[in-house]
Amino acid sequence: MVNGLQLLDLLRETENKMLHLHRAIDRVTSEPDFKETVSVLTVVVRDYQMQLDKMKQALGNLEISTSQNSSQSSQAQNTTH
Image (cartoon, rainbow, N blue to C red; front, side):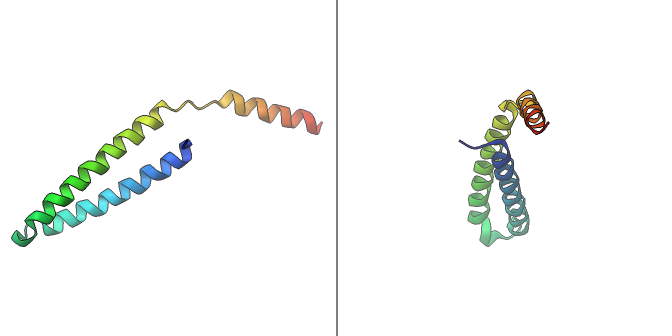
């Protein structure tokens, strides 16, 4: 299972890859010789976008328990006193 921080790292990495793909598409779009390349890159970008949407949804569904962290901190303080 992936935790929230790992999911956030995957999200950032995927967004970075998409940025590079968009730049590549922008550069070769006007070149007639690269028409097939643009089509393939567009499909790859769509796949990455679907992954991003799933990751964002998963992050949105994560429950962050601050009460558990607070109780652990309290227990740690109580054991030191």
